Amino acid sequence: MAEKALKRIDWLLVFFILPIILAGLFTMKSFAVSEGGDNFFNKQIILILISFTVFIFFSFIDFRFLKRTDILVYLFLIFSGMLLVLFILGHVSHGARSWFSFGGFSFEPADMMKLVLILILAKYFSRRHVEIKDIKHIFISGFYAIIPFLLVLLQPDFGQAMIIFLIWFGMTLVSGISKMHLLLVFTTGVLMFGALWFLVFAPYQKDRIINFINPTSNIQTSGYNSIQSTIAVGSGQIMGKGLGFGTQSRLKFLPEYQTDFVFSAFAEEWGFIGSILIFLLYGLVIWRILQFSLLGISNFEMLFGIGLAIFLMSHILINIGMNIGIFPITGITLPFMSYGGSHLLTEFMGLGILMSMRRYSRSVHRDDVKNEFLGI
Image (cartoon, rainbow, N blue to C red; front, side):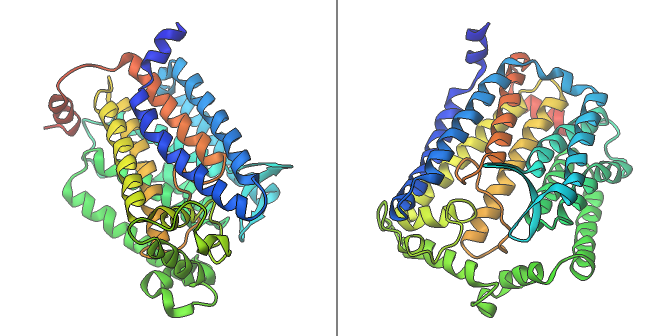
């Protein structure tokens, strides 16, 4: 039994993820030495081992029970409730009440909510594949996303709210809606952003977006992080400064090098060559996930895999974008590389569910599966 479950794990996918994890660990270890302690490095080792154990455990479970509407609604209500409780018992960090803190342990419910949202949208769209061109399904599915979106936005955590929006938007796009409805969704998104700008965003959040257009507009305050991260990436040049010689992080010009700006710290030490290698590895991870999704036995499995890929791609693009100065600073982690347990656990849980689904995947021509999914 255990042997069969282990065979369902795609060890090639694990092989692609491992160097990304090591890149994050090397970066933390490098700067931990300069600061006289290995706190982040040692804790991250433990978090990785826990997350990988959960990944293996989840691959043993038959997750077809997640197709049940009552189970998904129950999970949705639990994590929505957690997001509500944060307003009372949440720990404030960097101006956002996003975490539960229990001594040395912290937990961010928004991470798990992303996985729940992927599951519930996969269930919704898979049951309405034939009638998906009806525009009402865009708004009904949007209802599932708007609840966690608003709860996270009001913490306020603009970055996590944007990831939730992108998961819904991406899964809506691949569900088979018409081009006219696609234009409507885009227009709705623009109007929503306008409303958020004038009615919801705090001044510091507006500053971050303004820095997206002109990072040098306020170097001493809101633009500082963007400038320092861009300097770190650029100073790595082709080959990098070498492990342990990243001056931006060692001299503490670069804030949060272990979480938000781990890519900048890595790029300074490993240069353009190391950065390209990281991009390649992420591309291979997404490729493997999409391959598995196209072999799902039903649209539910296919949509879940695609949703998981959208989730990871959103994190990757936004995090690296803000590290190189083309996106606002939003506090989004880099998958498998940034320090922290909540995002790691969520990523490996999602991959564990995907591995479990391989037990009842189908082996047919990939083009036939794609055509069936798209209704061609």
